[in-house]
Length: 293
Image: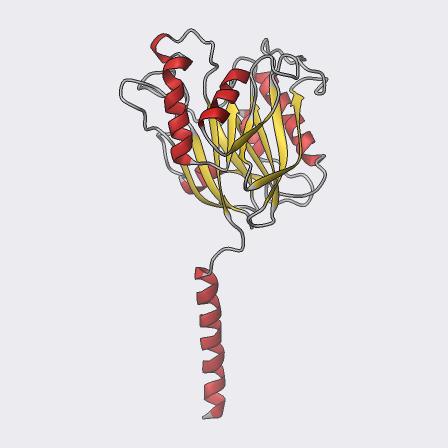
């Protein structure tokens, strides 16, 4: 009788252990990320100019309440207006034209009560990445990436965010920009997980996007990054994120939240809801909720 009970006890123990493990709370805390091209505020967009859209942008950010927002095409006055109207955020980044306040930002907004900035900076997608305003790879417009190293007070975990806006015309610029991005990521101070947000101006089959997904530096395998949206929606075909202030979005998803494979993705969404007779931007925002394991 005793010899029969021992295996049963072991089986029950395993079942309890694995059952509790499957349903236990994750060790880390959830973190909501958004990437959003808000369309630069001086664009002559008629009914959809910034002054008509801004209140909707503020409301969207308040309702979604991301912990991190990667903005693209944000001018200095737009960043300041968001900080004034949406409580709880601080802003990192510089204008791409002079490394100060001139030109578009690839700004990172973050919840200051939760996240501490350990380090941050901006580099230019060029042969001289530390030179403000520089561009060399066939892009007529200056392109930048702003990054930050955060520590999460609620979990004690640390992570990096890189937010970028790739060129809309030059494919060599897009590919070389990703090469530079990956070099910068590989040179970071420690091995904390990485999140990349941005408007890539490139669909999922573009070589620039593919090279990011195939990145295998150091010990990471089979690759380092995954597309948070595709991880949860692998078969979705309605994925266009640029609509140009119309009801017809393009076929390609060009706005992304890429995450380190060591991070768990709990949710991902393309936010297509628009207010009546208005568009919040000419891009749909994209969100992802991750666990800082």
